[in-house]
Amino acid sequence: MQTVLITGSAGLIGSESVRFFAGLGMRVLGVDNDMRSYFFGPTASTAWNRQLLAEQYGTLYQHYSVDIRDQQALEAIFSEHNSDIQLIVHTAAQPSHDWAAREPQVDFTINANGTLNLLEATRQFCPEAVFIFTSTNKVYGDLPNFLPLIEEPLRWEIAREHPYYRGIDESMSIDQSKHSLFGASKVAADVLVQEYGRYFGLKTASFRGGCLTGPAHSGAQLHGFLAYLMKCTVTGSPYTIFGYKGKQVRDNIHSYDLVNAFWHFYRRPRAGEVYNIGGSRHSNCSMLEAIAICEDLAGRKLSYTYTDDNRSGDHIWYISDVSKFQAHYPEWHYKYDLRAILEELYTAQAAKV
Image (cartoon, rainbow, N blue to C red):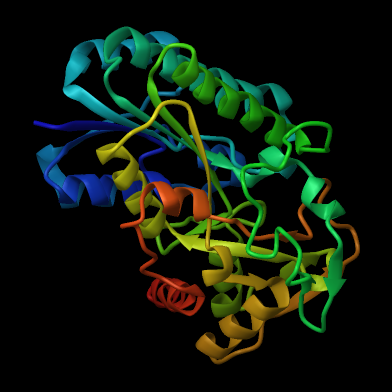
């Protein structure tokens, strides 16, 4: 039976990957020790999602409560299943650049050393497997903030004639900019994934995501922009906008569309690839624009405050240019636009209150 090992299997992209690949009849080995509850508190725990996966997929889903920093525990899993593993989807991470500054060593050992452990286990036990890594647009640091941005009534924007109008592509430098410690640890992991492809010939890819979202997201203030925003709107909880007049722009991609991209890469893999992946011009919004849609769907106003203290290294404007991935995999298409994403988030959150 085709087998996929998924790290962070109870998180947003991990659980979407479980559902996607188990839905294709593949056996799934899930690795997740619910570190999200350590990062962001008990309300961000993914234990509910782990239980749901076990109930939905039964024997197709085998869970390991293992920390990816534990090299011996990972090697035991890889050794047990060996060449049966044909795909590794690595989504486990410390995902917040604010949190990383609190405990830099924890952040780095999870994001960088944990990725190295997985790559080396792949090379030793199943070198023919495809290795997919969920990287981040934060590998570009704050370099996007030096683009010639234009302030509009509800958002920051860039001129239509600018080469990056359709989005930022993989040609942007990842060097000599402020990344945050989270960004630095993800750069290390991203480059390792590339190197195991280019140096050892493994079939690896780094997918540098914009804002990844979906109804399985356990949104928290420090991570999970749209999910947390919708949660606050529906529940009446207070929300804080950090800087840039609330006009900062993000592109947003549904977890299904991202995992579907993984599937296309898995079927025709390459070695040491890098792809910017996000909502692109198809699905993006500013903070103010997102608030307006959330309020419309929820039928109530969001209670929010504003502070000029933007998060250090945060992007003012980021839209992904996904044309490289689309050129390599022209059969891949979006299923969700911004409105459809927010409608799903509203339905999921409303069911909890």
